[in-house]
Image 1 (cartoon, rainbow, N blue to C red):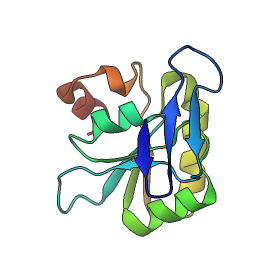
Image 2 (image 1 turned 120 degrees about the vertical axis):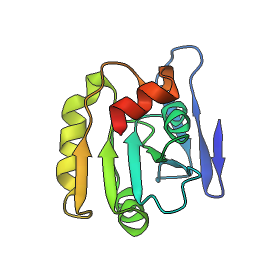
Image 3 (image 1 turned 135 degrees about the vertical axis):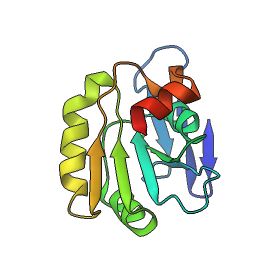
Image 4 (image 1 turned 120 degrees about the horizontal axis):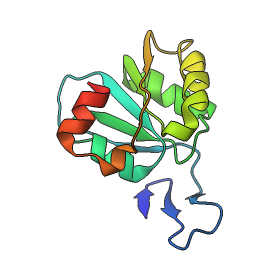
Length: 130
């Protein structure tokens, strides 16, 4: 379970649907990295992937594959570059999200993944997302 001042989100541990449930929030879950001047963020599907990426860069978990308007505003206000790195089965959604984000952020790129980021070590994540 991940909690923010506006609510939280949790994941089903039994395989029931929905896989992720958000409580009273429409924004994703943001995990800040320790890098001071890095103005890039990696958009991922779930909070565990965001935590894995956060050792290298800021990360933003969509808790799914939908990017709401207020999420786009949050991205535009906080970062200059967006790296969209969704799971392999969501590659089409990653392209669609990147196309929309290009109206809000100058630098957007999509990283196509073979493995879920939450299962990779730091070196493997660095190789994938830069």
